[in-house]
Image (cartoon, rainbow, N blue to C red; front, side, top):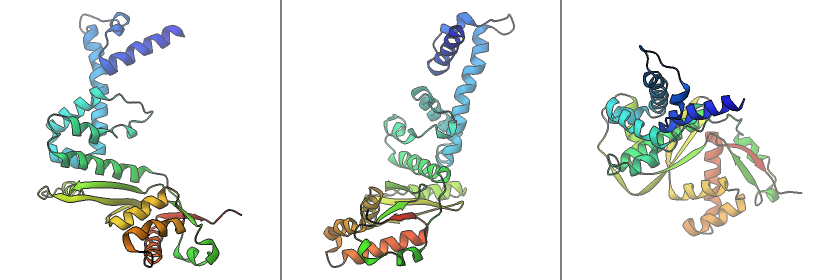
Length: 262
C-alpha cells in the first residue's frame, strides 16, 4: 500500500510541478518513450483545467480570444493547483491572478469581468431554498420587529465593481460588440441572485448595499434602522429599511425570519 501511495504522490508532483521522480517508475518503449508517455497525461491535465476555465469565463474568453485566454489559463494552472474533488470549483482566484499578471494588470476591467463571471457561476450552482412571501411579514407581531432577523437565500451574491463589466458580459455572451470600457467615479455594488433557474442582477444604491450587508451579517431590523440613520436620517430610516425589506422579499432573496428569543 505504501508503494502505491508513493507512486501516486510522485505522479501528482509531476502533474502539478513537473517533478521527475515518476520517470524512474514508468516503462517506456522505442515507439513511446517515457517522456512522451508522461506528457500525454501532463498535457491532458493542464488542458482539462484550461477547459474548465473556459467554461467558467465565456465572456473573458470572447474578449481575449482563444490564444490569449489559453496563455492566461496556462499561467494560472502553473500557479494554482486544483485542490477540489470537482473541477467545477477550480478557477475562483483568476480575478486576483489577472490583477498581478504583467500582460493584464494594466487593464483592470479584465479582472472585474472575471470577478463578475465567477459570481454568476456561484449564483447558478448555489443551493436552492424556498423563499418567503410578503404575507409572512404581515403575520409578525409588532413587538417582534425590533429583534427580527432575516435569513437570505444561499444563491445571493454581491460584487463591487469600478468598471462596466456587466455591460461587457451581456454583450460578449450575446456575441454583440462590447461597449467602450468605462470607469465609475466610485465602485458600484451589484446584487446577483437566482430565482428558480433564472439569474437576476441589478446595481444597488449605497444605502441598500449597506442595509443588505447589515442583514447578511446578522443585524436585526432594529439594528438595520439604526445603521441607516447616518445616511437617511432617524425619521426616514425605518421607512427605508421597510422598503428594502419588501423589495428583497418580493425578489425572492429572503428565505426565513427569526423573532427574538423567548
